[in-house]
Each structure stands twice: as C-alpha cells, then as structure tokens.
Length: 305
Image (tube, rainbow, N blue to C red):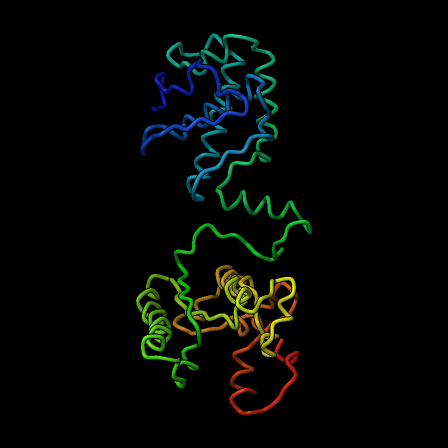
C-alpha cells in the first residue's frame, strides 16, 4: 500500500461488506495510515456511515495523533475535490472516484463530518477502553478513579511475598523459598539504581493475604462468602484487585519516583493513595503481623481494615 493511485483500498474497489472482517497484512512504510484515512473518506462520502459512528484505533499516542491528522487531511482533500471536481488530478484514483457520482450529497456528508471532527473517535486502544469504561458509569465493575495509561515503560513493579524489612528478619520456610522471596526485593532495589538516570522508577510490591482462586478453593469458599473461611485472620485477606489498584495508583502518580528502590505493600499504599478493596476496606495484614501477631497480642481485626 502506498499513498498514490496504486493504494488498493483508496481505489474504486467495493468497500468491505457489512458485518465482515477484512485483514490487511502490511509492513512499516507501506501506507497503512494513508489507506485508513482513504477508507474513512470513502465511508463518509458514500454515505455508508457517519464519522461519529466510526471507530478508528491505532497503537501509541504519536501514531494516534498522526492518524487523526491524516484522516482530517483526507476529508479536507475530499471536500475541496467535491467543491471543484474539474480540479481533480486524474491520477488520484480516490478523489477521481469520489467526484464520479452524487457530488452535492457527497460534499454535504464530508462537510458535516469536518464540522463534527472533534467528536471523532480516533484513539489508541487504551484511550478507547477508558472511554468505554467511563461510559458505563456505575454499571461498570471498575474503579472510577482508575486511569488506563498507554505505557508503563517508566515504571517497573516486581511482585513478591513479604517486604524487604520483613523478609530480612524472618526465615521463610526453606532455603529455596526464602531466597526466592528475598531476591525479588533485591531485584527491584538494583533496577531502581540503574533506571533512575533514565527517569524510570522500580519498586517491589507485596500483597497481603491474597484471596486468589486457589486460596478460596482450598478453604472451600468463594469470593461471595470468603468471610466463612476457617482461619480467623483471613478476615484481613484482600482481593487481587486491591494490589492491582496499588499498581494503578503508582502508575498514575506523577511523583512516583519518591518510591524508587523501595519495598512496599498494598495496605501501606492504600493509606497513602486512598484506594480501597472491592468491599470498601483497606486490609493491612503486614501491619497486623508485626504489631499484633508476633507480639502475642490480641486486637480487633476491624482496626486493620
């Protein structure tokens, strides 16, 4: 595909049939962006659909911006051609096709599309998913404060079991197990040193007592009745979403570099960022282990949620 008369999708070929899927395999520099813009111009001008009912998606913000500009340029070129068909270069097969029939109506459709161009959905996959989630409102099972980010290249999160301070003073079951837990904390610490000069942040994050599917199955409960599980301290367990929200909070924090090289836990970050688990609580079993369990004391579990 190239931005000229040989661009197959911009020629007067039939547009893809309704409810069909068309896949084009093309390498870099073959005119994909031009072709998408040409397809949009044809769909709009020929009355197949309106711009506000089209979804145009690409990867990366830079590519999204380029695609948006290219689509608009194609629509502007189409509008000018339809305004003055005699000025069209015969070698431009897209514009030649557009001015070949129903010129007044096609020009009106393109003009309307340009007037409402700011409302066109031309975005990255992440931007589109964010729009969908927000449009669901309370019907969507999502955190309204969560923000999908395009890239986490400047944030590295290593996940383990136990913070660096806890693991440093506790033997964890066996030599292989112990080393596995400690090494991940050290990995984040080392990565933090190497990535800092590049503006990136590396942390190690540990969840609390995670209510994984395996854990729920082992106790014979589900997420709906997890509080019926036998161990009393399971009252301080957390859903997988809790640690996920911790990662989301770090990802959207412009000052996340303050955590670089640190070993953190989900309960600790919940207190800082204010997010909660799915039930509205903020379980912090690591604090309970250190402040209560290891001291042989008793405490109300609710004080650690």
